[in-house]
Image (cartoon, rainbow, N blue to C red; front, side, top):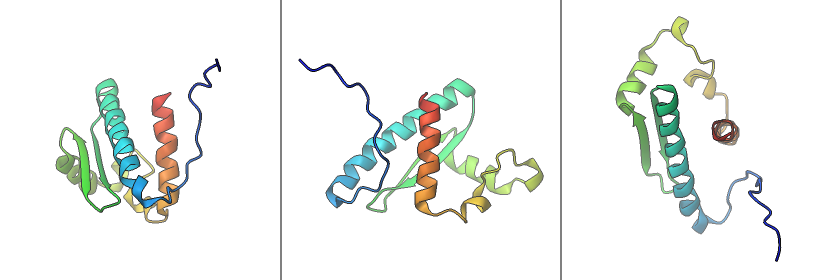
Length: 111
């Protein structure tokens, strides 16, 4: 009987097998939305997340409402920005860099 190796850390890299993309996306989307919901409950924050599937279908999560949070984010003035990673900053990142940042944040939230 082999002892359990426990949870293994896997290398984060783009999945090349197109048939696996939707399954992996669905699992991770559910996990992301669940973690966002937990963060809302634990910290009393408002969160809006919009993701597009490999099939280009949009999914969103919002606490309280995605549209109101995005409207509030877009209409705020620069001197009120409390998070240095806002939309203008993200224009300079590519998708891989943003995915790495997201993975790091999710790992921190999970801990």
